[in-house]
Amino acid sequence: TTDTKDAIVLYPLFGLGANVAQFVSGQILTNVKAFCGQLTYGNQLKFLVNLTLVVAGFILALHHWLNSKFVEPKMKRRAEE
Image (cartoon, rainbow, N blue to C red; front, side, top):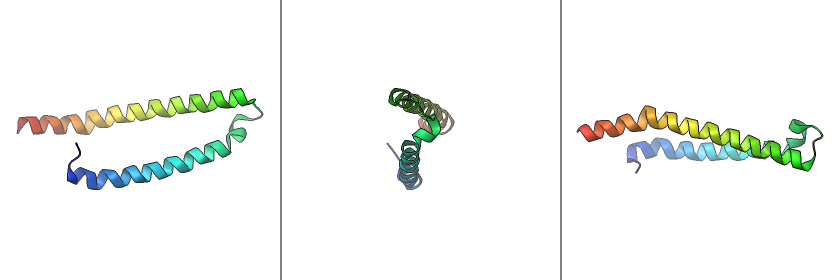
């Protein structure tokens, strides 16, 4: 669960992140031909799938780092109290 103190900080960041992600994904989809050159539809689709996998890997790594850096120490401090 999210504490009220944490929610005040986190939820606006989630909204900002969602809006930025929507903008970036729209720009990528509209400009995929410029990124890929004159590739076929299948190759453009492979590019988008690979890009999705790379971004998902980055998000998982970021989640792991944030969890180990902030969440786990906070849970340990609470357990000790």
